Length: 160
Image 1 (tube, rainbow, N blue to C red):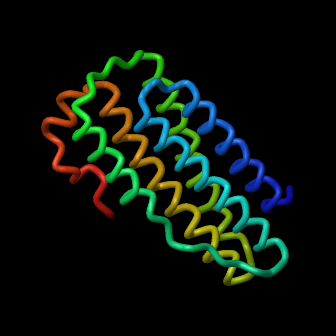
Image 2: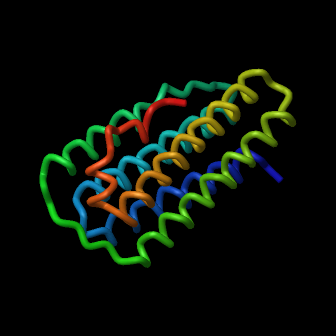
């Protein structure tokens, strides 16, 4: 199995799934976050593609800070929320995908020979962990939006 080709397919599938979730959400803030996650998957795809040719460069992500800003905007909008329970399941599925991706990258980081490849896979695993954390917050928000926004001092998205 070509691990790079497999990883690129995983990232492509993730991008497509997040774009579908963005289209299915009626909340503009959630749409924005899902689009941000899709765009992150494109960045991962490009980084993996470059690693295949011996070049590896992946920039630091700002997704948690960016999502935090979106949640601030949601809170300030005073919008009422009505989420379908089915949405929660879709976000849990995305969370499962992120966990599997993280596990895949951690496993492959221990198998590749080139240092830059190992560093890339470890960085990708860390990125997937951030996505998992963000999805955890979205699930909590969708499950109890008023309570989440009321009590949120946005410690939910602090770097770990």
